[in-house]
Image 1: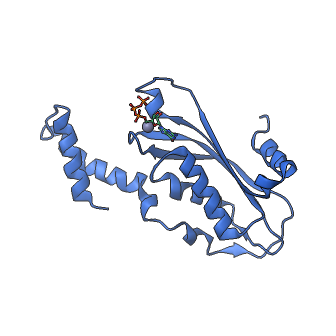
Image 2: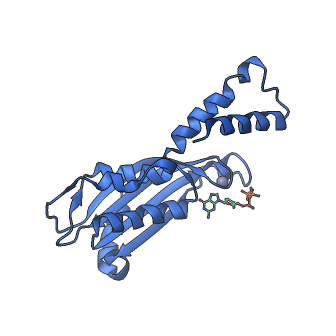
Length: 188
Ligand SMILES: Nc1nc2c(ncn2[C@@H]2O[C@H](COP(=O)(O)OP(=O)(O)OP(=O)(O)O)[C@@H](O)[C@H]2O)c(=O)[nH]1
Ligand SMILES: [Zn+2]
């Protein structure tokens, strides 16, 4: 990442809003924001495949689901956060391999830590899992609050956006799809 460019940009924004980037409280802000962007956009420099180098030659007939994975992303339209929970499920194939369950959460982070829209984030997680594990199916559901809808604009704090992407058997077989959705949306 080009930190000098980020810092220059932040100084220009501060000037643009009528602030003095040289006053004491703001002096370190451009460098701080650059460090923050390195963190919140770290996924831009990550290849998701690296998380699937270790897989297990184990067999599991049914669904593997990790629910309630918290994530923070950045809306690419306004560059403010949207955040919530992701539910990631797959149905291993006969000959396919299993991954460590933490890798499903790591995969969410790789794509969440980029400028995003929620629909694309959901599809990228699903499609990468299909590529990497060659499972019989994948289902990804994300529920998020968008700061661009809460603190500004339409100002609807608390409104949640749900996106779902199903692939493979979860797409083609309504019974299997109903099973995974009942696990994802089971009453608490
Ligand atoms: N589909 C989708 N839209 C998003 C997402 N995040 C933000 N948006 C929307 O992106 C749209 C951008 O619309 P514009 O009309 O160009 O921008 P705006 O004038 O700031 O819009 P308002 O937010 O309605 O004030 C808004 O409707 C946002 O709600 C997302 O993840 N997916
Ligand atoms: Zn937005």
